[in-house]
Amino acid sequence: MSKSRLLFLDETAIRISESSLTTLVAPGEQAYVVVEDTSSYAKRYDMVAVVNGDKVFAPTIWSPKDRSGAGVKGINTEMLVDYIYSTLGQETAALDNPPLTLVIDRAKIHNEERVLEAFKERGGHVMSIVKMPPQAAKRLSPLDNALFHDWKEAVRRRGPLTLKNIEQARNNITPKQVQAHYHGCGLFHRQNPYFDCPDPTDHQHAH
Image (cartoon, rainbow, N blue to C red; front, side, top):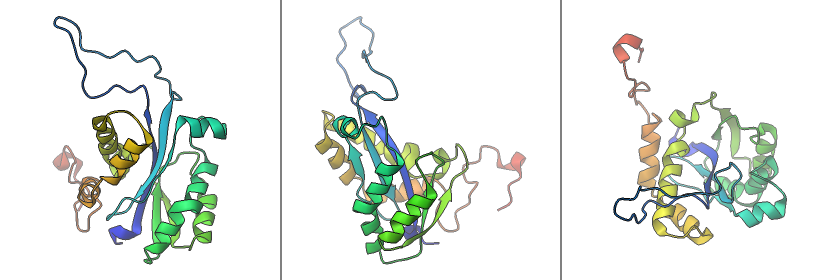
């Protein structure tokens, strides 16, 4: 399968209370930052993002005000489906390269039936969904702990945590970064899927 036809979707968040990359420390003092709110639902920006092997699709981002107005603590299925209807479905249809396969984790909000129905109404180019095994996203998804890490680091470097800075950091992700993380997940044609095994001799992988 072409990398351009294999899409990964995932959600992430960045808390307003997260410390920056640097701080000023007086001589003899300990280097730390006091953070008052570290709960899972602290004030934060939430984002749903999608990539294929060539590009990052336009994400959808919710501010704390958006979530408060919607009466939700985090992203839910309704918000995900609305993203497909409003933005993602049109972008995937514009690729004009069906069939597309969407790869997701096993989060409860990823309702396969409703997601496929939304894509069908927006062109029908995404025709199948693959769910990763439990706890596999960190090794299989270019988004999880990879592009999301790049995005958060870029946001922190830009200064204040604002919607504009978040969007700009996302817009600056390059195709080269995407391809590097696809390679890091073993998603290139003819790539050895056991390339990062710590003990290939003992494990006796067949390739």
